[in-house]
Length: 126
Image 1 (cartoon, rainbow, N blue to C red):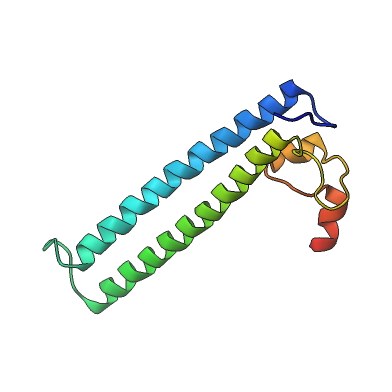
Image 2: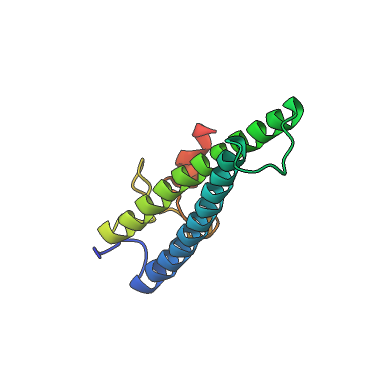
């Protein structure tokens, strides 16, 4: 792990633990989504006779599958941001704003541990 100009090794380790927990939760959610999608595909292919094949039911099932897929996609993107934050810890760039190279406030990192921008650089984006 490279030296960080704003945070101590202990602080960075605490952030790493937060990020690893977020990563674990996201992976669990993705696993759940995968099972839901597989179950939905199984039902759609007619593997079960206990479900109705009414058009409205099929439409609802398709909508639920689409929502599950969108959630899984969002979780996948979140995983990428978590992995990028973990990489920044390794490279000594965690907590350093990617725009102005200033310090990202510790409170902000506790709330948004994947943050790449300090509050001053993030505000104009919104």
